[in-house]
Image (cartoon, rainbow, N blue to C red):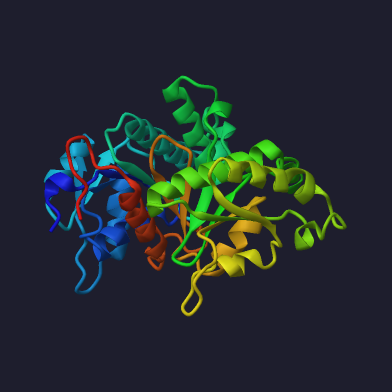
Length: 360
């Protein structure tokens, strides 16, 4: 049995209030209270009360919101409550399912608060509910300079470490029970993504994936690298990136102790890596050359189980593999499975607070 002193503190940012973020957070506390022990919401008290009320019904009373003023207070909150730390002034209510600068600003504010708390080791990890990129951009400075969570967290980490952003390289890993993939580039146009396939970027991605998964697996991961071109270039017939860039990066990573192979044909490597019933995956992770190449296979297996993990940060950050879902926001039907998986993975990856051994 896990004692209260061994529970890592995890902040969950509420995401865009006009989307399903607050609703799925409330549903997590309602459906999996044991898993959510030690978790609290960095967000807006009124928004979470509204979300909790949405889920109430016959035989299912509304979960109360317990207001806390610092992370450690979550350990004293009674069970069957949603602990919420109000981040700044209360948010003005917004219309569900509509992008707004108000919701975008508050979502960004919550992420920045949680990132700084994680960097100061006041919390063991953060889990980010989905924000809306259009709303974030509409919020103006400083949020409009960030395409999404990953870039915002990278900037916060660089500031904390006193480094330039380029000196804190990060990568996105999307994972579920069957497949993991790490991306060479993230939120850029396809044209820019192709230009990002350089020796340095591919090598750096392999090394970041290697270091991160050693901690998670307790051994060196088996890394497969996908080619960029059809059939991994077919010996140069369909492009020379595999010969001139990707292959040399793999060789260099291998010389530095990585268990890495490729470049493999991108249309089959994900099937080879998939760990399914009756099929043990050949690889622990696939390095994909651009966003859609890597994310389509994982999301096809089911967004309800996918978790986004940011690798390379001096903190643990996970998030669900879905967006704000404006089309169903406010209806009470959103599935919390992906957020629950993100919380579970954050707990597995995080270090317990100073002086607290990790629970078993």
